[in-house]
Length: 395
Image (cartoon, rainbow, N blue to C red; front, top):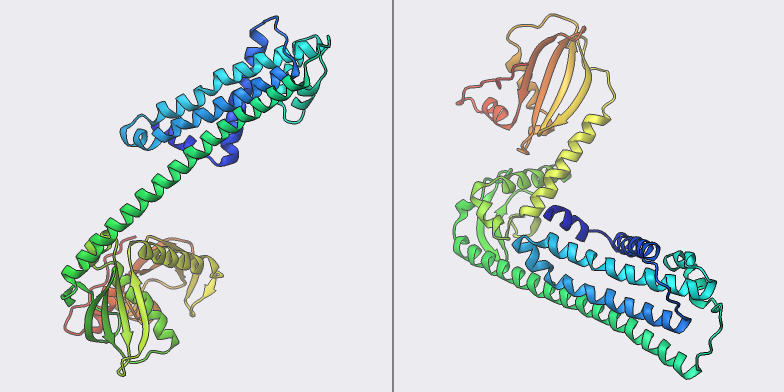
């Protein structure tokens, strides 16, 4: 029930308006049809009854003030039910008065339905009474003025409630932001003297300094000026390194950020890469979207060489999978050679957390082998002191 109540509160302005109109209309139509009273109501009295109804609708908004406390303490559904439930007697009152007005104007109760139809309700409001009774101009003016005051009073209550809620939310948000900022700044001050909090940069660099700037912990690195392609690889590699650094997890959870600031030997800033909880989510999404687009855009089948054909590509869970058919039998002992070739791809020039998986099939679709390469595998191949072991990747 609480989740339903929350969903109701998340509705847009038009959806809320239609829901309120629907509740008032249904309850009014039922009351007008079921409660048979011989009352007649003139135009002035009908205007007054509508003004009073508007005032009551405005009063119901006071219940909105209890929403924050209700959502925290598990009775939000009661508040939502009370708000929309309070519209039922208001709708019933409108239905009864509309029936009385219809009886006065048309000699039948049946036209009370007009009251709940926009624009058509004017025909019920301004219709002359069947048996004319003169009301003094002063009295009619007074009634209309009182109706207007009641309607405006209800609207004023509703607006004051909304202003109170907005001011309270703004104050609470500012207070939470200030507290989060203080926590982040204190944490940065605590660890700013330690360079070992940062991961290794994705490029050969000299560590110059670690400093703090408000809510950002910065490591300054000196590098050779890269070309455009290298700069893009460094940015992606830096984001992956910063986003996956265990020593920075607490920093991010405090609301702060970490930055690699790259500069040349003259001290000129070449580029800065900043990571935080939200920025890492954005970067990961961008990587996944980009790799998915690459997999989808490849026109297949594509002849790779005399014996192999790329027939399909897919991307999921940080793994780009290529399905390749071979026109020959699977040769023994080629796994390391294949991995060595894959490690030359731009994908593995820096570590961005991706895996390339090749699934080899016969031309009839029978599986032959599956070979995967990732950053660690490629690093092992480039380091002769470390044994090279292909990833265990059974079909």
